[in-house]
Length: 346
Image (cartoon, rainbow, N blue to C red; front, side, top):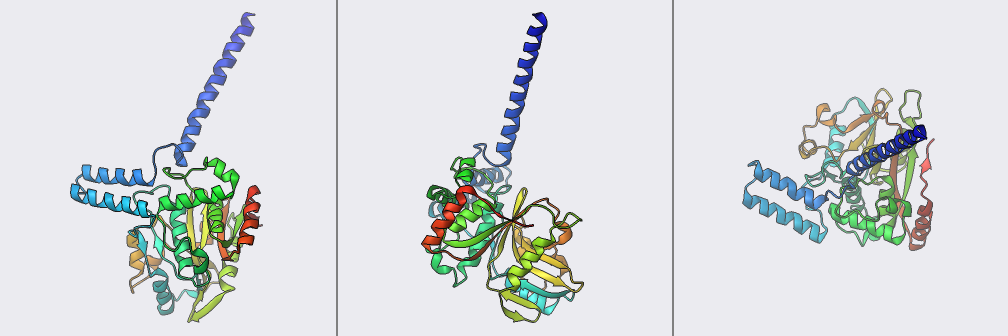
């Protein structure tokens, strides 16, 4: 009886320790993915301004002015444009035609703007900034402008959170909505490829979500992903100037564990290898604005170029827009997200 009692006490202690460890790990995950009720874009923006005042980097009058601008952007739903850089692709087109002797040919997506992370979304806002990049591309295209009647401007991050919540309310991706408890506003929750797909589809955009779920080479890289991107852009190169082929297709959303970026083109180099051109929301404004100057060189291009050897995450997902949806087609795709499945390659 004493032995059984001691064993029962030991089992209770073990279960209590395991339960406490699970709670700690769960809180870590909540904090990592922005679901710990620590506030969202608005709170983080104001906290950063307050820290700047406390450290003497910002005058009180400037604090109140910038805070008012943040509140106005959130109230109107329109991005303030402070992290926006225009004209980068046009500068790249000049660079490839005037220099880049190591490049045989390059395919670029349709025109778009770059959006960097701001203080209010640093550490969690990459998915939202990539949506802004993609939307800026779509809004400049005659093929898509008519189906974007409800989104004719670049929304701020809190507004994008509302748009995703609205897509969930329509019935898109109930499993994903449940994961976030149906709420993104006021949180720092990361979004991924499935949220991007549902948001774009809810805006009447026809898109595909592809899952490169394992490496397609013995070196642990993803050559099939590069091949897919090349086919995507080269199949619709409507303008060619020198070595530059300018596509009418918009940029591609790229997701991997912990981060997302935007694919804006692909190079074919003289040695017959390929290199993706990528806009990263984590790139500071200075890097992108330097590229809009006329004196681009290899050093300035380095942050944008991503070679096959750099693609060694186990899994990548991409979301690509391929047209507009009729109301009937949108309804069909809504039903398809009830059990969400991406196209798996290979």
